[in-house]
Length: 251
Ligand code: MG
Image 1 (cartoon, rainbow, N blue to C red):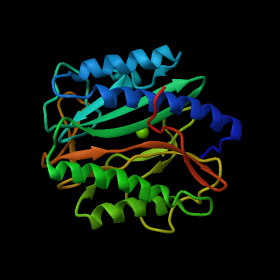
Image 2: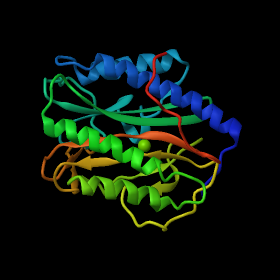
Image 3: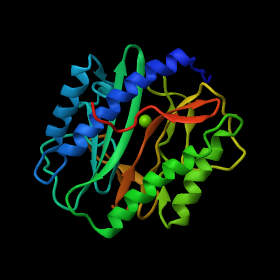
């Protein structure tokens, strides 16, 4: 069942989302060659807890850290650790926050130092695909209008969208109905209504859309080890259109 949120609930979710956005901003500034993903995780945990919020991913199905940190060919769910970022890497950071009963969830792929033109284009295409999806997030449209807009844009640029992982409704649970695939057919799926809050999160690969999971049982990588990027926002659909709850921002 898809639960619609009241204006007051959306305001609460905006507070959770602001903490997500502020955390991503701190990480954006900290990301440089030499820092470890465990150090980034510690920065995020400290920020989230300083806001009297909880890192939503910590302990989720046994996940051992506060953020997901996925490098290069890693798609999602990378575990922070002692690896140091190198010039030319790209790193996808996913942040989830639980605050006063509501969740916020967002992801950004950042360049580390100077990256290849191909990597830069991948980031640009993935971020833009999220906005293509948002352009369909209006009451009266169908869910897969969002999905199709993302897929169509990504594939028109010569990249592929991951099929095995999808976006989701979000609210008092981190994962609620409906699923929000990054591929689909226009005019299909549930009708969008004011009060829906969705985590829209295209995962885009340079090569094949196929992925596999590493032996740590978490890290998802592209099957052909090509680069992958991930952009996500928690988005509320209002009467007059979408509003992003997790914008990257200063405190
Ligand atoms: Mg998500």
